[in-house]
Length: 394
Image 1 (cartoon, one colour):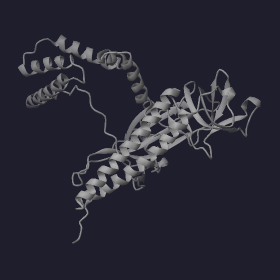
Image 2: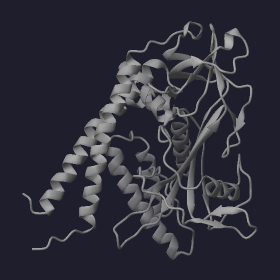
Image 3: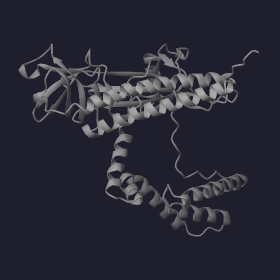
């Protein structure tokens, strides 16, 4: 009896292999966590040959300009994603997929109150500040420059970088990690959820308050549906996001807005915009990229076809960083105080540059390792079990 294998079986097999790979990768990350946990932070003046951990302010004699935001920096890293359109036949929704990445810069100095040391950033795992998130599409490329490169320049940049493997740390989100630690600190102090929202998201809370004031200033509306929608929006913003009342109120407001848009469409008026916040795009698994999308523009300048998203992160001068790497002799030392160099080691490849403080770096490394071990293991077991069930092995 022949066995039929369809696309779902292949997807389960890929999920199983990915889960196993993530599971073992998690143990490697856990080893790095134990290594960081056992490596104490020391003053720069006291570093010796071998694995060291230091914290200080970045400085550069030769800063570079980042390609997306044109920010002067010591090092930049750009993660490029390409939009994949929805495919109804294959039951695939539209999502962002990894396309390429680039990291560049020059050796920079890290200094504290005791001295400074040269850092060669090549091969490092970065966890650094975001300086730009941009999108560009070949459907309607614009040459207008807005805070950095134009869309035409971004498409040419994609063509230059081309499809490439994902760089270490390209998906790390320093801002989200810092927000998580701030929330944890406030929770330990017994801060109420409402007060936590006001401290962490003051602009969002102020925007909501302004919107409520504007709705109240409108006063009662002559149209019953418009008045019901106005009152529902005011009531919605009186409940916290996590409450069941907010969920119910959101459904009610959405329903009323749909009715209002239909009503205004019948009157020949513009539809009312939806005010509730839009959720971010879900994370997408990276596929194997191809080079078929690289084309030439009319004027001969290489350009790329499609829609792309760029996430740029930089090591910025005068910002503090935690660096763990291998200390060796600086072959281009200027004087006796410049004899050391921090780089990625040959026998000990651990090399991390992070914008977090030492305790926070340790916590994040532990969380990532545990997530990969348990998440990868559960994914592999789930996919294997479902695959065997479909193949009639149970």
